Length: 251
Image 1 (spheres, rainbow, N blue to C red):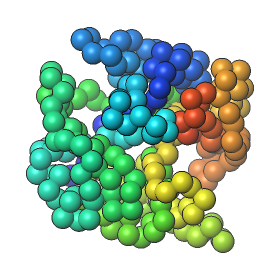
Image 2 (image 1 turned 135 degrees about the horizontal axis):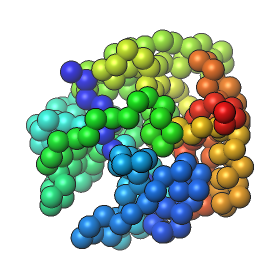
Image 3 (image 1 turned 60 degrees about the vertical axis):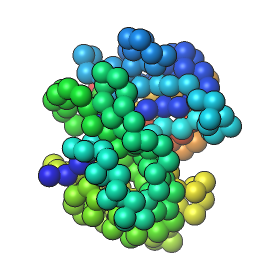
Image 4 (image 1 turned 180 degrees about the horizontal axis):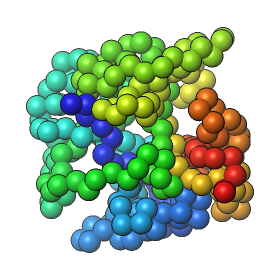
């Protein structure tokens, strides 16, 4: 069984401002987590993501979104990914009442977290429901090496390939379902290797207008992609890169 993304987290210097921004752009509702300085972002009753302020030990790190990949046993999986060339950055350690996690840098430096929750996870919302994460995209230096790592460690299945001409191959992948949920590509212009997450919205044109009005920056788009979806690549007011995906305009 494939190990999928189970949580997303923004590390930023201003948790409150970031929560207000994404509530306006994506439509999430924000609430404080009980007993800790952490903001939960929800689509309806479903918790989708969280926001934490940049800790002192990571001061100076640019604001960034991270993905958590589920693991049945975090400690065992840490040993496996290290043997495959990844590096342990933090942990494994417990979040009381929540679960156990570890911070990993893949063999080319892209960071992600491993996570095992203490309780049963909610059933995921249908694919592309507004407020969910609709696409998980890895910008890296050698996608074939990245693919060997992630497919070998997490059981992801190779999906369609898109020839992008001079930009090379856009390799899509499946995570335990019968449709593509993300892709990997070589991107020498990207700063190092990192994950980019696309948040589903009803209409990307309106989302672009909202993000600009809320102080964000539209880098690219609206731009149509294969499958009839549209995307906008953006930065939030603190500088974290993200994207939105959906129909061109709200129905």
